[in-house]
Image (cartoon, rainbow, N blue to C red; front, side):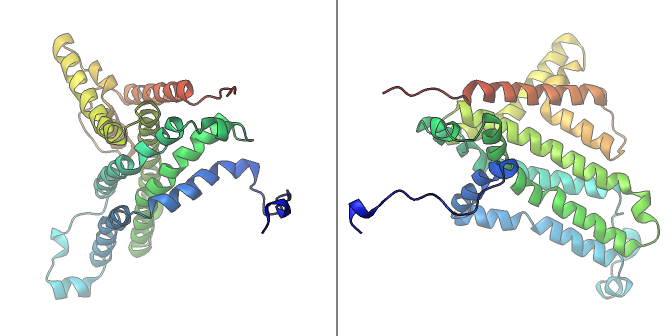
Length: 286
């Protein structure tokens, strides 16, 4: 077609609802992410444990299968709060690895290539940009954490029958709330690192280093000050305390639950501050 025939034409395609405009970012991000076979293989690997847990729950209620396999019921693990807590720890660890794989490259390319004015010059706010980038992680992490665990909970409730569902509703609440807390912490941490560290391998290493450094500093503060309040900066310990409280698992907590929640809220606030300093509009003058 000749150049002079390329006249301007108004876009007549479907329009995105303003409230869901931020979902444009994860839609295009997934096209890039799932092109890598290694990530696709890891994504499939994340469902091995839930699948095994589902088989275990089924066998736990199938006497004939247990007789064939010669597995006495008394030797099987009880399906209770501890069972689901362990399952969430396993899936949460996989969520940390997944965050390290895809999180560092979410914001840094936009800042390195000066693409931020292109985003914010459109009807797209900073909040929608951050929410859209976070949704890339939140959706994937949800698929491998609370979604399969709640399916396991429903399977157990269906096979157990009676009033098991009503008696153990707190497990479902703990799975949902605990998973979302972990997802929020991971997403904000890696997005803030991606915004400030342009080299992806370094940003990924810093994500792991954040947990190790916070634990080390907390141990040093506790040893020097003869206190346990150093755990206010230990993210891993805070998550452990909150998860144990949600599942009603009795543990010797170093600090109260409200202290752990306060520490995690501080981490989220600090990450949002870092993002607000980096994600901002500016005028390009030529």
